[in-house]
Image 1: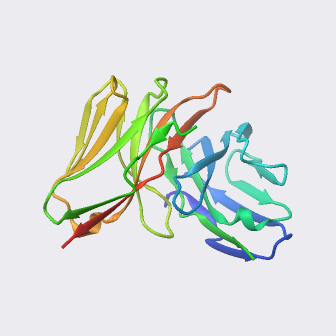
Image 2: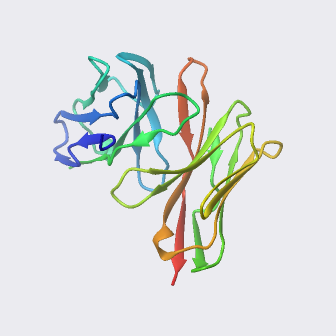
Length: 113
Length: 115
């Protein structure tokens, strides 16, 4: 297993367009997180899945954001009607248990022009 | 409300000397603490962690110290090497009010090791 994989690595989109990102966690990890990081900040929690259940969604996520993990394996994060403020690095992480480290993917860099 | 704080945005250290990165937290429910290293345009890479029941954990050149009474942890890198130059994030984890176990990150400290 090569770790957490994210696709695409980079995405440039025009304001108002929809974008979708994919995350493939480490195969046996049942816990999956999405974070967002902007310049000068640490990763900020967006949402969490345990298996296929989305158990928490941050107040940072407006209704334009939706995430799924349909079979408890890969996850997708969709942003509808993108805005310039959505420009950020979107990070996915997975872990097997609590009190262990979360492993991050390489991230998807979104630029909204 | 910044629950995990890294008050030093940057740090410069000579190669071979000790680097000390600091982190403070406010939530006494945090039970696990981690340090991550991040290079530009990449995701954070796990470095070292410590459980709240311990006060020290060592892994090669990296040692993390936890002072629960002061709600403070630090990462020591000895000896520092130019390849250690990166942004270091402190993180803490616990169950939140909704029952989700999640990781809260500080804003990072940029370490520059000078050759």
